Image 1: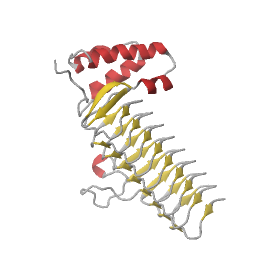
Image 2: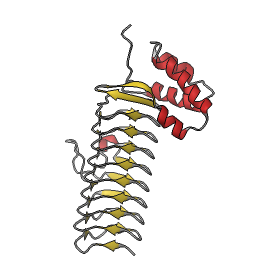
Image 3: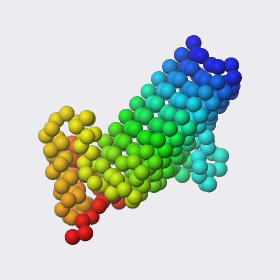
Length: 261
């Protein structure tokens, strides 16, 4: 049985799972589907063709599923899909997709979106990501699994960030960051491997050692990065292959900090 405050507005057609809590003065639109055991704080707006999974915690004043902030949007039916066990903090804004971007914004499982985070249209977020306060993802951005975005950091549209990468706070990122790397600055450039993240998630030290060798070849020797990636893609190490493949497939280019020498 759900716990819905008497001042909350639930439009006819909305699907509310079991044991859902909806706080005072919240609004749930007619095309919203909310999974079991999800908690929604007061003064929250959830509308549009929005599907939210199980065990999510959505805090007060979040706005989820409102129309894209894209001038090309013309009222077509688009979608927002949010997975399970996410924490979405106060004043977060999440928009659905657009026709030109595939029509779907998708957020995976076990993510933490801190206060004032913005997720724009057609963004794809993996699992276990952390976006600190006021991080901003423009349209069509893609995050892998375990990505960390520091506070007050904007990410340019169409940028891709690989698994276990970290972008430091107060940066501004306009190019792709491969898996396992740490980027910082305005404009943000790759500074090192995200060793803290690697040690937390990769238990085999030999795998980290192989990534260190690959990082040196890619970023510290001023070699053509695509040529190096073409060689590393044949590595026997799955993490090195993942990094090399990401670089080979990059469309916006890699955020490389080149030596002045």
